[in-house]
Length: 217
Image (cartoon, rainbow, N blue to C red):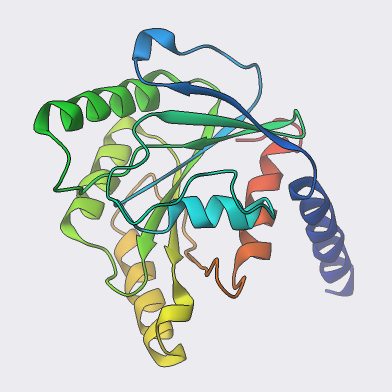
């Protein structure tokens, strides 16, 4: 047990080191035909519009403006690729559930996301962000079912935990944990996070960093 604790502590240190290294914007993709292979493992971040995706990515990488955040739904209109220490690619994906964007634009985003998820061989996992104030909404369920059908590994990450009480956070965590049991492609553990007070960020960095170990998926 002591050995396991020491090993986990060492792994956390490695993860913290990784996410403090250089992280640079590689490319923004609006069309599937423009996708290129960067030759590195990738992890994607997706969720409802305004779920706090940009804030989470900025918090993970200890940066303020790496991913653009906005109160305007649908601000992320393309797949944005970021290289972390030339070892791992973070992919900021367009949000869903936006009501203000034109229907034809929404359709284009959906086609791009679908193509990327279906065909990206380097994609190790998708982190599906869910607002902890609301829990899993119908369009979150739709995305989970879609990922199940594609057999794309994903892990649910609850955001904005600092906006609710500890009692509420515990309840939504338990509810979400129970819900993912019905989804075959879902990783069995939910992470409760806050970009505001850094809750859960260390744990999420650890999970992501594991994809660099022996090229594991």
